[in-house]
Image (cartoon, rainbow, N blue to C red; front, top):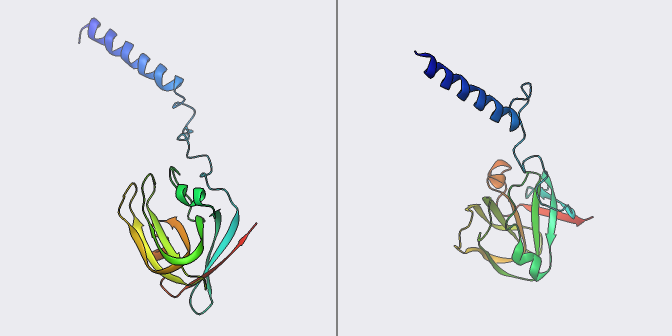
Amino acid sequence: MNKRVLSIIATLLVAVFVILWQAGLLNSGKTKPKPGLTEAPKIDKEGELTFFKADGSPVKKIEIEIADTEAERQAGLMNVPWMEETQGMLFIFPVEERQAFWMKNTIIPLDIIYVNANMEIVSVAKNAQPFSERSLPSGRPAKYVIEVIAGFTDKFGLTNGDKCEWSAL
C-alpha cells in the first residue's frame, strides 16, 4: 500500500476511536445502559393482587396500578414502554357486564384477564398484540380486568375458574 492509503486508514481509525470514546462506548469494558431501560416502568404501585388456583393455592403476587375512573380505564397501559412480570394494571368497572378491550396505542403485548364480581377468572385474551384495534371481548360478564405482560397466564398456568384478590395500599 502506498503512504497516502495508510494515512487515510490511520485517520479513519483515529476518528472512529474518538467517536466511540465520546459516545461513552469505550469505558473500560462497561457497557453504557440503553436509554429508558434502567428506569422503572411507568407503573404506579397502588396495590397488590394475588392469583390463586381454583383450589385456593397461591400462584403469583403482583404490584398493580388501579384504573377505577373512566379516564384511567381509557388510558390503561397506553404508551407504557415495558413492564415487569411482577406488575400489572387492575381495571375496576362500576357494574359487572361483558367487557371488551383493544390494544390501540399500547406498545407491549399483553394478556388480558377478565374477572367476575366473585374474583373468578372468566376468560383470558392471550398475547394481545400491540396497536391492534381488534376487539377482545370477555364473552362473560366481568367487573374487573387485569392486564399483565404477554405469556404471564401460560407461565403461571392461570385458567378460567382460577381466582384472585387485591388490596389497595
